[in-house]
Length: 181
Image 1 (cartoon, rainbow, N blue to C red):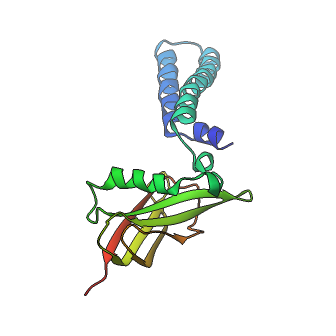
Image 2 (cartoon, rainbow, N blue to C red):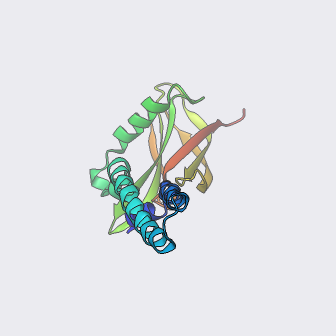
Image 3 (cartoon, one colour):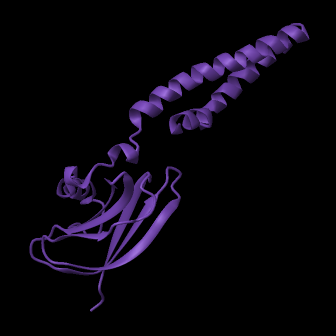
């Protein structure tokens, strides 16, 4: 049902409005009779809506991965692998390169929740401090934003939260803050 809502209320439906206005304008400029203009205009709106919806459907259904599709039973999730992927993707962009956080939707007993994991990839240094983790919707608005006190030994991985808000988030961000000496 969400796909249908995404199609009908997509910003790309403005293309339908634009094309329909062009059709109405062309018929008015062409001095078609009012009855023909209204009838053809309504048909143009419908045809444009179907055509635009067709393209939106294929772009939404093929490119977008919904967190509900990503949510899997805990025994099937390789959190270590997901943390390694996040580490590889972010190691050139973040200040604390060896520290990684991950928000992962997990299904348990038909209930999907967001779990937060952290890992210290450094093999010699312990981390003491805080980690700020936030999840965002597809408009970039924060759904949940929390700070956790943590201590991670070299190579240690921890699960620090088991219910971190809406599991149907679009993205997450994290930032580590070392403890002041």
